Length: 359
Image (cartoon, rainbow, N blue to C red; front, side, top):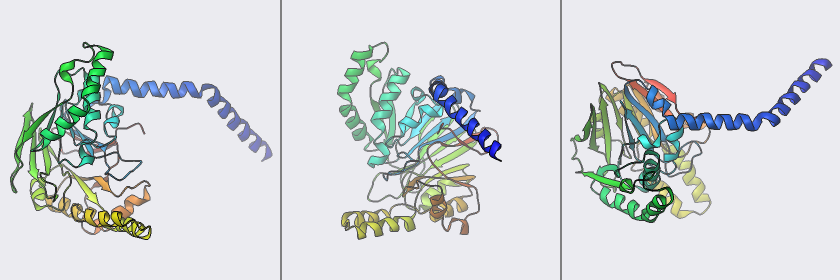
């Protein structure tokens, strides 16, 4: 026994010494591998034809170490779109194997700060990485013009710095910033097509998020596969109508029983403004159970939760977040985190769940 213990200690010591000697090389090798995959776009090149989704941000305004601000990356064939762009989400796109310069369009569900505050970062990185020759199109209902103008003004000086530093051949001045592409706000019971190209259609529909107006969700279709992105919304019959039969429902969710724990803590701490805020947010978000009811009644292929409130920093909290869901829904579901990915290959019924981030 004593000899075995000595042998184990020798092996452990040898491993520690080996890592001390070669650890830097190992780390640099892994760094090179991740950077190379990101810049070459290996994942994008290897994806089968179809619809593919990655949550570049599965969180909310509440800090969550596993979730950046709300953002959904959609690959349709070889076209790459982003739906909403919250804080920190742009930094998750490149490491997923989808080059930032390949993002072609942004679609905004509404203009709450947590859904738009990464737009400047995405636009700048997309411009630099892709040598874009025209501004990045940003689609949204009326009001998107103001949002885009604000970011272009805020980044205006920096645009000049980048061109001056790297030169016009590397950073074409004509590609700086974003371009607003507004569409009218849909009426209830109305699905309006806002983009169509190379077999891909993106349609918008109205969702209830009062007093925020306009607020829309999006349905994306390509070669017989479909997905729906809710944006922020209370439980919505209108959304359920347009979610009928989709392969993938990507829906926000707020867990009232967990928010009430935070409300109680705020009350004990004498943070009365926070108490009011926690009360207010309960009335314009859907609960995990309500979302599950929509998924059940719309007969969706898979349910993916995102824009998760509150933060779920440890895995056991996901089970608490889903309390009551199994009572109303027995279909497949995933509690999203940054990097959660779903593939819907064309010409099949297959739904593949994956993770695209190296962490």
